[in-house]
Length: 141
Image (tube, rainbow, N blue to C red; front, side):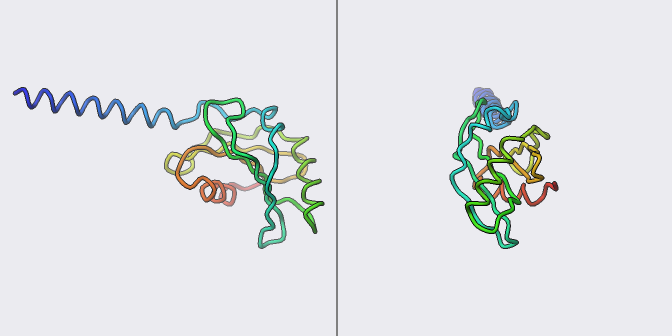
């Protein structure tokens, strides 16, 4: 009988711990536009279609979660042009939607800008870079 009580108590404790962990990975809000505008775009990659993707340093911005931020589909025949276009996009950034559950414990927030480029913040999950790239491809402009 005592074994049943101990096992039940352990099971309840484990269930509570798992539910608290899963709740902690769910962001309560997306980073604000003002916080993202302070993001430092550090990495520009030329994609196979000729456009560029700009990645920012991972940050909490103004939330409790650590977020990745990227702008994709940036026009530019060379990196200097892509950097200038990304800066223009950042100046006109506005909130789109989110947080949206994407895959496993990965959540995405979408942002729009006057340049027509896609912008995303992502948090959670394992292998965030791959998850964020997959999200950017799956969400349309």
